[in-house]
Length: 241
Image 1 (cartoon, one colour):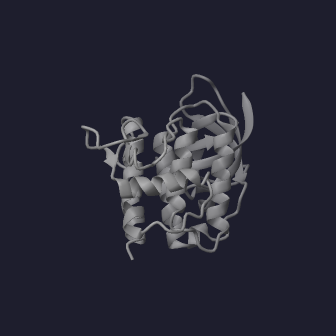
Image 2 (cartoon, rainbow, N blue to C red):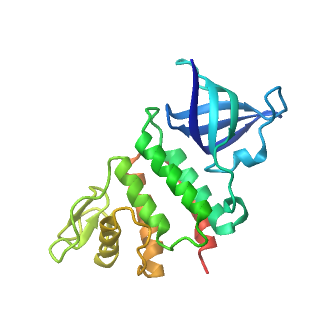
Image 3 (cartoon, rainbow, N blue to C red):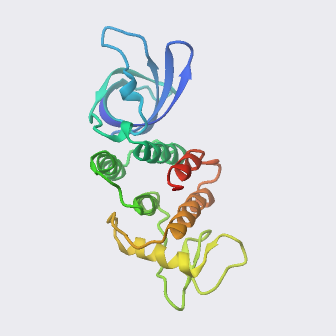
């Protein structure tokens, strides 16, 4: 079957001298893997600018149910980045988000709501002159909702601890070690109340760093086997100063 769809590039793996495997999240068919030939063909060549993490593409592909690697017929950029590849901070953010999505989006079923949200986020990263420090925290909390694990309950004097394992605000520290202390849980609650708005301004830097690490842990607890998100180490170095 020939399909035409928008796609977000998540990850590439070199395959031989002139090919690579590209993992993409498509609007029409969910996550898919494609074999790309990087040498010139009648349809043109795969340009390096189309292989940047989070690149949004228009693709035409020959898709077969029993084939693990689908075949790209044609692809072209749907968005030409104006700043993302040239900005160290934005590039690090894009690498982190792409790796997180690559490890979390394992289902092949489409989710147009999620795709449209991701496209909006990518456009925002590229367009904004300066992203808010809480940007990634708000993104990860919003992503958890699309994945069906959005934190539940509210922070209060009666429920000041957030249980990462069970995804709920609770009265006191659980027996397991996976939880947020009240100061951290308070800011998580503020992010939840922001309803996806990217301007939670008053989170102290040390709390932001802890929350980022703990939200990654939250995903690890709920999606077994996703492995270490290596790009976060690069991102944390970028934000170190």
